[in-house]
Length: 531
Ligand code: DHE
Image (cartoon, rainbow, N blue to C red; front, side):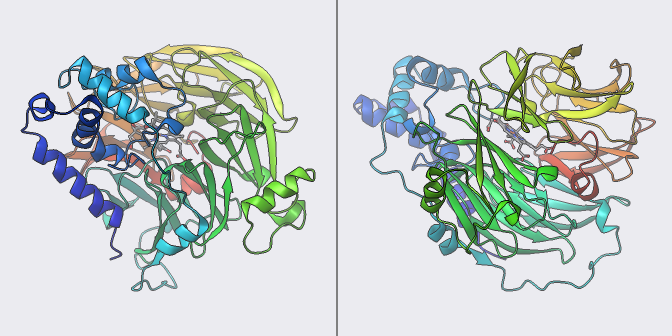
């Protein structure tokens, strides 16, 4: 097995946290001045998630460059009370206000040096599995199109499930802290998995073997696969780049610095594939811009193996870019944290996490065409779309409010606000089911799962399969007959429901299962799945 250096590092950091857990932190740190105290507290309480280097791991990098929108009192507020919709805990019970101020000041101190992560770095750590043998046909009898992957964050593994028998065909180790949906090749054979600390892993489902892995960034958001399956884009927070890898061998083909029109660098909020447009669409987190990057040669001759970012910038200064990875900028009023697309990928629906409204950007004309009332931190990344009573609607959960907003994508009107038992994270449906499944991820009702009628938009049933435990994220089998739901706990499980009768059929023990991804539903962009 390929050694996971990031993982070993994290284990060492975890051990260090456990080692100090018995200490009284104020006593241990009392002889230090404020700056030293901030650093000591950071190393003891924060480094296991954000890394001792402060360059990020399971949590984001904690350096001034990535905290542009969180300074002073609001930073102390986050340390004291945690952060909604993230894994960030509250420390107000463990630290005094002075200690919180000291750690906030330490986090706001610029690093002497922020390392870059270049194409050469990506190549230097790239490891192909020497034991990998590509099978000619799947090494199992199951339907390769009905395989479902279960990400088990409890011990950083993925289980490969036969979608018909629910037998686990393989369980392989992933990089540390996988986040976001793994992305399948268009034929469903390979899958690419990304961790928050930038590692990207390629796995061959037919052979049930890892192919290789590399680190594409220091702190990454998500990945997207081009429609032709040739390129994998990795959206990075750190450095401020979009890394594009060859899906064949994971070599970098372009590491593009993300510089807004006004010259400022920006993190990337997220990147997605727009299949009909043969492009990647990304939003900048620190500048009001959306970028569209072509993923074929069709738009002109602009690829000579490795495209250096300065070459790309040079071409832009000469006029519109052309060819493979040519970029188009679309300006918006505010930076977008989170976004979603209509199924034809003509419109992007975006929101900033702080705002109370969404915007619709028509990608064909390249400008905002409508605004949507979306209060309470909409989580558009989890939005889904389906046909309801003859119209195409989209729905999004809100991370701060117990409600789902349902929008008509023809005229952008709010069709309905569905009140739920608390703020939810994920929604899912399938073309062969009359229901939308919606979790209640936060608050006292985190153990509930709402079942909503796609036409009436009413909650018709609320499931309560594991009282007191977090019950979240849904995926369907290829035919939509079964719905798989996570009991999101270390000694958790995936519950298999009959999607028609809503009765439990099986319970498969899993270690903190998070997302589940069915090959067929993902590669066909099934109605009701988030992409
Ligand atoms: Fe996610 C998907 C952003 C916190 C679990 N999350 C995504 C995507 C984005 C995103 C942009 C879509 C990427 C994709 O699939 O290509 N997530 C964010 C945040 O900004 C936020 C709120 C804060 C942060 O920490 O970055 C956040 N996410 C979380 C969590 O705390 C979750 C619950 C646990 C975890 O693993 O970190 C979490 N996010 C997920 C999962 C998906 C996801 C399981 C994929 C869902 C899917 O079905 O496709």
